[in-house]
Length: 114
Image (cartoon, rainbow, N blue to C red):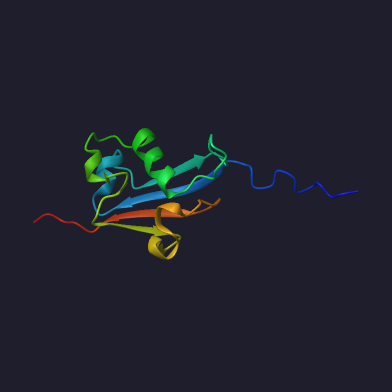
């Protein structure tokens, strides 16, 4: 008889931490750290990735109407560094990175006025 004890494993919601620094926290209610729980699967059956997270953040957490300060052409605005578990997102596949339980995603604005 087949062991089905792992059936459905990984299909639980995905809790992650999202942090904003370098002034980006002002766009998100002046809160630097957010606990976010994402679905294990999206409507199309795929797993949530950074691209999905960006849309989720704008739709659910962003308090400021200046979306262009965070998103440009459906991607992170130039001048914003994205870290996935302390590694540059370019090393992880950028917006295609599939989010995992316990991930920490940090958005850092490198643009400063003055």
